[in-house]
Image (cartoon, rainbow, N blue to C red; front, side, top):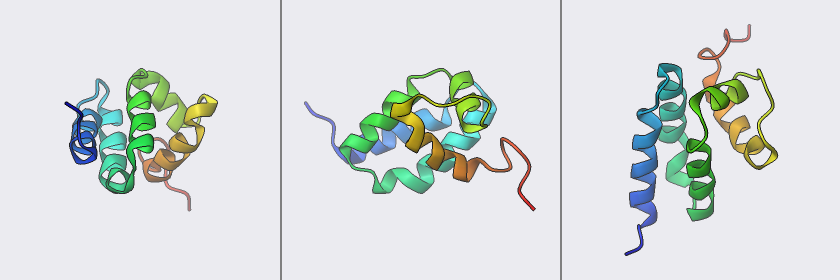
Length: 92
């Protein structure tokens, strides 16, 4: 049985909230609530692949401490937009 896109969105939203690092819970659950509703199946598959990466790696990518792999670069850029204030102070 194939999972519907709506079920995939709900599952990925839950995975976004239940991370190992609290900062990633906050960053990814905020992103999921803002973006996943508009994602198609291919975008959801890419986001799921990102969620398979370690929290520490994702945090380093989102906070700019290291560069994200090319396949995740645009997605991490989108996540980073909402993470300001969680990874570094707000710009003034």
